Image (cartoon, rainbow, N blue to C red; front, side, top):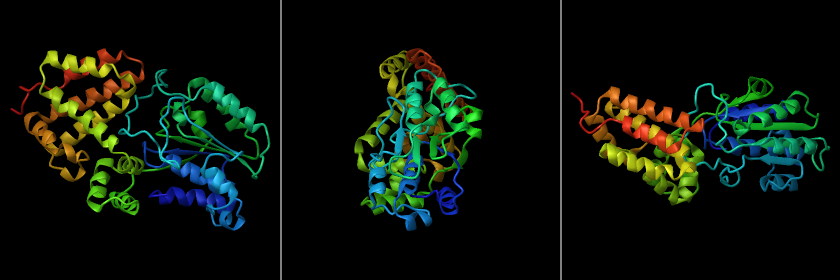
Amino acid sequence: MVGHAAAVRLLQHGLTGGHLAHAYLLLGPPNIGKTTLALAFAQALLCEDETARAAGRACGVCAGCRKARDRSHPDLRVIEPEGAADEESPAIEGREGAPTTRGSGKRKAASRVQVKIETVRDLQRDLALRPYQAARRVVVITQADAMNEAAENALLKTLEEPPSYALLILAAEDTEHLLPTTVSRCQQVQLGLVPASLVIDALVERGVETSEAQRLARLSGGRIGWAINAARDPSILQRRATALDHVPRALAASRAERLTIAEELAKRPDVLPDLLAQWQGWWRDALLTQAGCDAWVMSVDQSAALRQAASRHTTANLAAALRATRQAADELERNANPRLALEVLLLSWPQAGQGIG
């Protein structure tokens, strides 16, 4: 694990002290290592080396560890939402975009990738059987907040009365899209953003040049999984740049041109959540640039466009654009028409003449 020392210590304490909860809920932004930690914990639980387990870790070489690492252990079940992206091997969240902003108090939208009730029922049939090889059966749900309501209600029965040999590890961005009863039946483990210095060290250890590691650490904003994925796959940075370039393009466009941009982007509704998350980060960085807080700006590759926006628009306009972008993301979560939502959003952004008076 890179970072998250407090979370690791908490889980290790459960392993070494023999005081394990029957369910854990790992919480934190996307791409910070929740799934990595969940599978590392599962590997330690399934490790066949008693000495390693007593020390709160996995030996990494026994058959149980190897199978857990490959997700082929018969007593390990990893559940991912239908349509979810592949994960970085062995287990760093695969979504490459910025953290999405959830709507306030809203249930899950039908358009999101989901864990469905059929999957949970199949899991419950599995858990009715005793372990095949290990002392326990371990379940990892990588995006628990993507369970639809029926699936989550079904899972509650397992969380309320789990088999003695079962341990569930749920990962989610936050508790907003989970039922309070689900949250209350899990031991919560909070993961935060990883300090830049640790991100840089992790990238350098993986062969990334120091200067590039520093740039990726800045762009990642503490999301270690994103930084590692971006170092391995240059197309992630290319797609990110394309997404962010839409903002200054729209700001320089006429109203008619903005409608054309909205029409173009609406043809790819699957990428809109990450796109709008990137845009939220752009407007946040514009506000920070205007305030002179350059050290906090993530989008260092957008410095020229950010300075231009900061100099041409009032703080109120920049803040309003950020709120409008967040609202559009919330509306898409609730199945709003993509083209209409984008049209309203882009037309709400400040016009070229709305400068600082």
